[in-house]
Length: 174
Image (cartoon, rainbow, N blue to C red; front, side, top):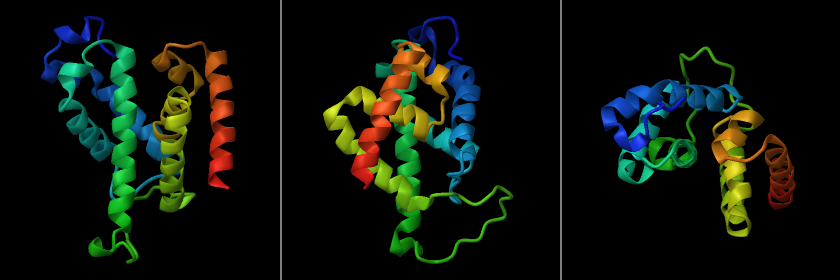
């Protein structure tokens, strides 16, 4: 994923080239899981995420774990902002949007994304690590192995955290 040289040795251009495919895969997984947004496609999500990442690039060039943790947060905020923008009445959020996209319609809808985001904010105050697991699994779409690697924990630890986070979010969403 991230190039073998340290991130600090990369210029913003070479870093973008090195991680573009990884960010695109993360975005594709996010949108493929049935949460496609009519305002975002994979490329738009990657570019908006990179725009947010590049503003803090100096702080992020520590290691792969820190970089992808922030990338997950940036991608989450892009998705949530897109949902909010679509719902805004001043932008015709109540109008029926038609798209030429051939993907299946989103399941769960925008309201679910916003409800999970708000519940996740509450979860962050209780346990930041559980919130990060949800970001990586739900908002980015990483599988258990990828999320465990990004967090620097074992797969079993991630499975326990994921189960606990889902239980807490279930309670918060009821």
